[in-house]
Image (spheres, rainbow, N blue to C red):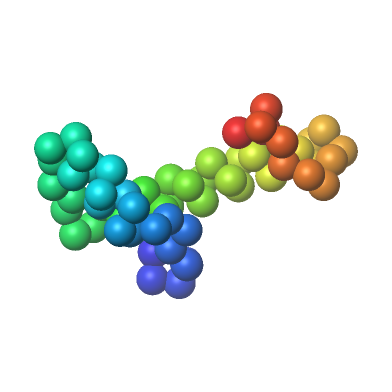
Amino acid sequence: MADKEVLVVASKVKAYIKSKQMHTSSDAIAVLSDKVCEILDNAAARAKANRRSTVKPQDL
């Protein structure tokens, strides 16, 4: 994840997990951001395959 920008707000993620009476590990945010990138990459590919330049909810 060193060359990628983090796409999630760490404080919001940590607060959400804390609301579930859980703790967040130090590397969880980077892995979550990687998952978000993967979801967005797949959504963009699906939109392109459908000849669109707009990612829509159904692409996610």
